[in-house]
Length: 222
Image 1 (cartoon, rainbow, N blue to C red):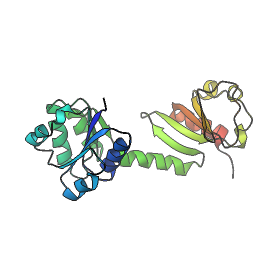
Image 2 (spheres, rainbow, N blue to C red):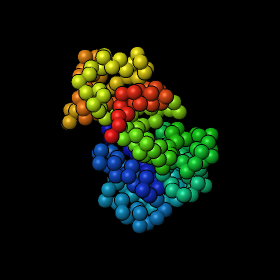
Image 3 (cartoon, helix red, strand yellow):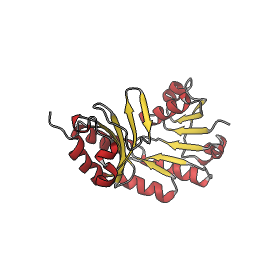
Image 4 (cartoon, rainbow, N blue to C red):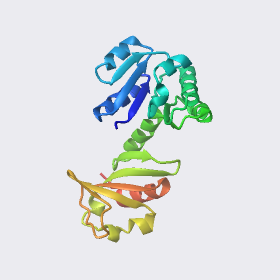
C-alpha cells in the first residue's frame, strides 16, 4: 500500500515537500488556510483542502490520525505551528515532522511531542557556508553536532593514488562511503581503488577529522 502523507502549510518548504512526495507516487493531502495556495496544489496533491489545523474538530474531520506521516510546514506563525503539532500529538499521529523557525521554537516542539524537527533555512545556510569556504566541498550534510557526510572533488594531490595508499581511515578516522565518476557510483569501494582527478568522493566522519583530511589531501592552490 502507498503511504499516506499530509502536508500542512503550502509555502516554499511545504510546497516542495508536497510536490516531491507526489512525484514519488505517494498519496498526499495538502492543507493550508490560504485558498489560492490550496488551488495551486489541487492538481499536484491527491487531495487539497482549505482548513485551520489549530481546530481539533477540523483535524478529526480530515481523519488526520489515519495518515502515516504528517509534515507541519507552517511559515511564520509560530503559535499555529505549535498548536497544530499539539493537536496532532493528542490525536495520536504516528510520525510528525515540523519545521522550526528558531531554537526556542524547536525546544517547544520537541517538548510537546514532535518526532522530528527540521530547520531548512539554517541547514541550507550551513551547507552553503561549507560550499563557499572550500572550493573542494561540493555538498555537506550534518548528521549531528560533530559528524557529517561531505562530497569532495579529487584534485591532483590524490590523482592515481589508491585508497589504501592514502590511508584515510587510519590517518583521519574517516570512511569513504562511495566514489562518483561521471555517471557511475562505486558504493563501498575496495582499498585498492585508484582515484582520478575529478572523482567525487563521499566521506563520513567527525567534522574535525574531515577538515584535517580536506586540508591535507584536497586543499590545493589555484
